[in-house]
Amino acid sequence: MVDPHGSLGGPLRVSCNQLSELKEQGHDVLLLAAAEGYRGDMPDEYCGIPVKLFPARRLMRESFAGVTSPQLFLWLAKHGRSFDVAHIHMARDLVTLPAARLLQTLRVPTVLQTHGMIDPSSQKLAKPLDAFMTRPAFNAAKKILALTNAETEDLCAVDSRLTSDSVEVVRNGVPMAPVRARPERPSPDVLFLARVQERKRPLVFVEAAQRLAPRHPDATFTLVGPDEGEGDAVRARLRSDDAAGRIRWVGSLPAHQTLDRMAESAVYVLPSRNEPFGMTVLEAMSAGLPVVVIEDCGLAHEVRSSGGGLVAGYGPDELVDVIDRLLDSPEDRRRMGAAGRAFVADHATMERIAQQLAHLYEGVAA
Image (tube, rainbow, N blue to C red; front, top):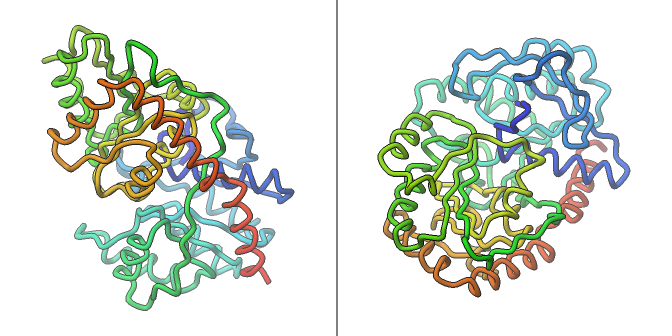
């Protein structure tokens, strides 16, 4: 899904980062997606990438899983065979799953990357969907990509025919941010930048902010992101206590503005549980912003080992403690921000990731 606000978040950022660097390295790239929220003609470029966008139809209002796009499938049926490789950022949804099966029927080599979005599920529709679409797509794919070993285990649990050897781990990368934060600045801003949905735990962030605001009268606490189900609860919590306007939710931002917004902050906090990777964490680190993540975040080890931020336990008390430590020490914020930026430069640049992908594509297209 593409819209003017970048509401899909991580998977869209990943695909754009990959395609941008592949384009830079001389490959022909095209991003296909469903789209909504545009007035008039659809754009033919998104974040510098050539795109072909098709109207989205929502079968369920609040979920990307209920989006479909018949026009996209018709276009793929006509033009799909022109591609050497199709890299599908796949979830249990009605765009990417049918697109994968259609391209596989056309014998186009497919690479599936699931971003932690396909795991064992107790939802009623997951079992029939996996039986009729997910597992056949896995079986027909030339390559399946996972972000972590834990995601590999989840994919093998969804499809018992898969083994760890069937899945290749390809980490995400980001371009180095062209802007740099000054996290040591006075009057620090603590930033939550993510979808306002239950798994991202915006209410935990608001509770932490409400407890920290009296201790740090010069600090502000800002939520940035589109409403995906928790908006009313966040508004109600802020009506009860917004620290005289120092805790606020400002809505969503277009993707090309998020780095500039990070550079205005002093701490980036992602309190979500079971976050497979967290692209915004890498982006914040690339801008020199210290980060706070939860213990089960897929990047917790990198945050801890790089010194680019702090890892909190699952409860609100633990989150309050680590943010409190950072707000107390401008020098810690400056040092951690510099360490995180150095980590991204050494280990998570898009140039390395794109070279790995290009080699992989050559193998599956041969």
